[in-house]
Image 1: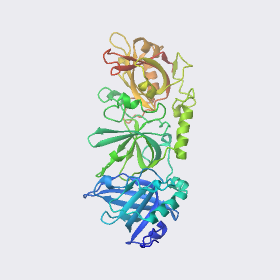
Image 2: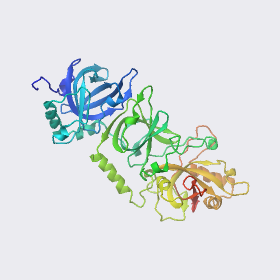
Image 3: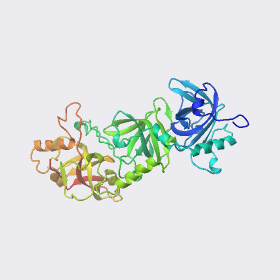
Image 4: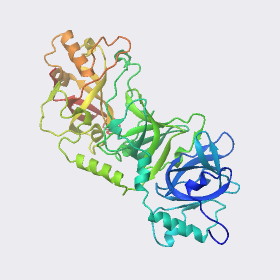
Length: 459
């Protein structure tokens, strides 16, 4: 205790001080997104732990603006609060920050110099004391890494399942405003999402085509070129409910642990849903788990077959063959971001839709193949065309409608009448060669298209 009677309680002791004002200091493990309450205040919740209580305590902060709420820069940073009131409710004991008389200060979790004892954010009523420095240095000497990690087990994107809530350690690559007051996060952890079953009806592809992406407007090529070529870039939407979440306060290009996010599929595309009950914490680039995930990705990239989807190992199906068996595979993200407009590629993909869907319509009235395929891999979804002689080669030896129908169903993962109700397709992974080209000399990139070539469906 200091000369003025100011002291910090350990969390284990503080939880018994119901309806009393206390001072706390601890290490941040997670925070909610700032949001506006039904009244005029803004709110966020921060969990801190100390040596006495590994499970920690939540501090509920209220402020007049979102900017006045604490913005935790990194997991393990130190949170100091004064004159918070210990409260209890059905969910447990928590500390209530009252904007009228409480104060807070945030400090980096690492450091040993006097300069590093300067807070990076303070509230209006915060007054530094000598006891603050001693408490901060004491916490910095403790090791909380294992305790923080034990609080939330995380999954890889390759392990997700539809309908489940889960925790995810990933990197935020980009944040985009897709509609007025609607935002989407693009996240990545270096692994491939598993394939999603396709329920879209083939006959609806003309009027209601399967979308190429979750976002209403496609991201620009400049943004796509900042994305990794290997590993799924996962879309995260925001289920705001009745609450206005402060999405703009989320930082891009940071590794983060999301806590309690929901997984679902939309138009046969995976997406995560950030809800008002979700939490997050930013991680330093030198965090041991972050470094392990980056290393796993870096080791995968140079492998000759490292760009194949995880779920098609040891090899894609034998339904198709190419004229270039020794050419390494690339991902569809590699294709989209290749620096030249025209080029040739070899990929492992699934055919999730095609147009026209009736095999009788695959050829034009003059007998020329013209089919648009919707291809996907864990990194992207594109349209590619089977045209003229490339279509002849792809469907060679299909000399009847029945034979062509059998090949179509095989490629689409169909085992029943495609016009029946509740048809679910699981297209197989196949290999194919793609070539990119443009149709407008004055807009090479804007008119870029893709064709399948040197590929045969052998059944």
